[in-house]
Amino acid sequence: MTWRTVLVFWLLGGVGAASADQIELRADHWCPFNCDAGADAPGFMVEIATEALALSGHSVNYKTLSWARSLEQVRTGRIDGIIGTDEDEAPDLIRGPGIAKYREALAFRLGEAPSEISADTIAGKRLGSIKGYEYADLIRDYIKTHSKTDGLIQELSGQNALEQNLQKLLAGRIDFVAEEASVLNFTLAAMGIADRLEVFLDDEETDLFVAFAPSSSNSETYARQLAHGYSVLVQSGRVAAIRARYGLGN
Image (cartoon, rainbow, N blue to C red; front, side, top):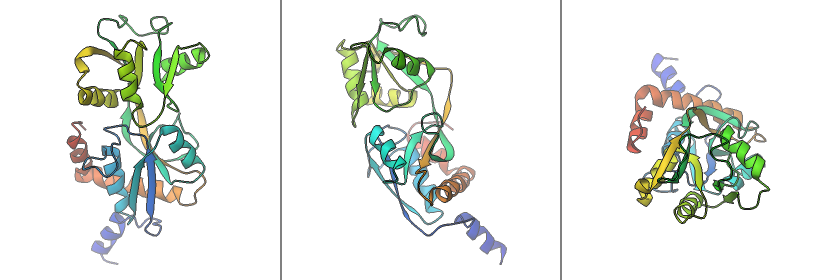
């Protein structure tokens, strides 16, 4: 085997490669991580996963689906994987490499935000959240504590849940919204309402993954091939180029 043959074999994911498959990935609309299926800019995690898995001969069929249904379908094996989960949210799934970061943000109406964010300063405020999402500790505890308090935790689902929550916030029907920072800023800019809200950022970041069905015999191979392909794309500068398309740095 020549060195050139070895290189091609490595680039194509020759370490334990499975046959070429169409890999079904789902997630709710969470731009810029994953956006509209079939769009010129379907989301940077979608693009990275598609190109990384293509190095092993696979194609990706990405579609949007509510987050709660995406989690249910990957756990039952009806789809191959989901885009944008973290270790705490879905420890049972087979994760590929961390290819993005989650940083939580809270949005308040301008002039109505507390001077600092804590359990005490958000106490009694109506939260707009999304069904099935796993939030950082402060918001997770707030939801758990007040889930049975009438009107305090207002959950939405569906493809436009964040936009609906932000509209409710501006209309005074809720008091604050929790969302990932990049997604929140992207949506505020798209809706043209960034100047009407104040945003607080959490200090902590966690890794986000494309994760695969725990019941599928192919999932370990897909995760390994995704990690391999991602490494190739990072080294080539392709990951940085994809992120730049969405206005994101390295």
